[in-house]
Image 1 (tube, rainbow, N blue to C red):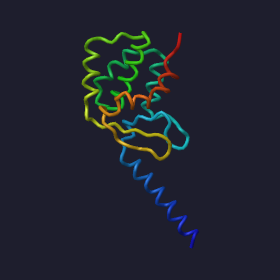
Image 2: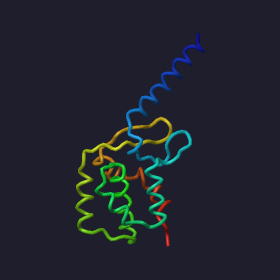
Image 3: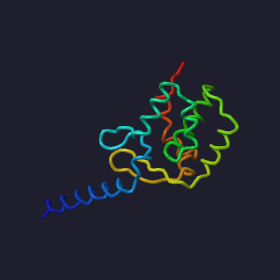
Image 4: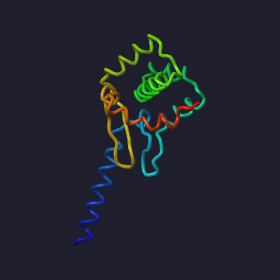
Length: 144
């Protein structure tokens, strides 16, 4: 009897994870350590490549992307580069960033193998939530 209960609890847990994963958009998912292996999402990998090649203009252009994950990553990346003196934000970029920070558009996020959620850009870009990407930025922006 105890074994059956353990199996039922395990299956419920698996089904809830699968259901949570179905509620997110993998094409617009921000994740710095997703799934069992702790891998970054495809968009995060793409941004790491752009940072590595110092293709900041491409990152800037994504502020106007339809992809909400790209908007989020562009905001946090450009703000960090600006803070470090590696990039100067233009007035147009500052206006776009301001609009994005007020947006209710939903972004899919993941962490580990069980945490999948949709969060508004406005919430994800609060100072408290920006810590979500801080370590990734610190690892991926070249230090001189």
